[in-house]
Length: 95
Image (tube, rainbow, N blue to C red):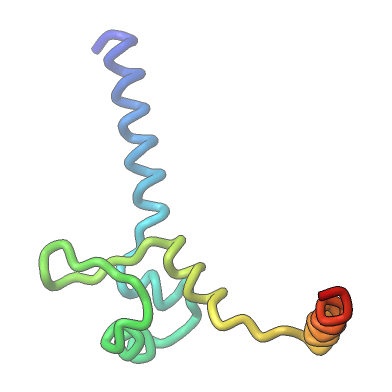
C-alpha cells in the first residue's frame, strides 16, 4: 500500500469513527439519556423523539436529536419570568 492509499484509508476510517460516535443504538441512547430501556421504548412508541429504523427492526438515534429532545420543554427560572414580565410591561408602555 503506498502512502496516498494509506492516507485515504485513514481518512475513511476517521470519518466512519466520527459517524459512529454520533449514531447510537437503542441501548446506547438509553444510557446516554440515563433512562431505562422501557422508558425509551415508551418515548419512541409515542413518537416523542426522532429515531431511525433503516432495516425496519433495529432503532438508531442521532446524538444531536437526543440532545435536542433533552433540551426541549424548557422550564424558566423565576428570574427569567420576572425579566419577561418587565419586558412585556416596557413594550406596552412604549407601544
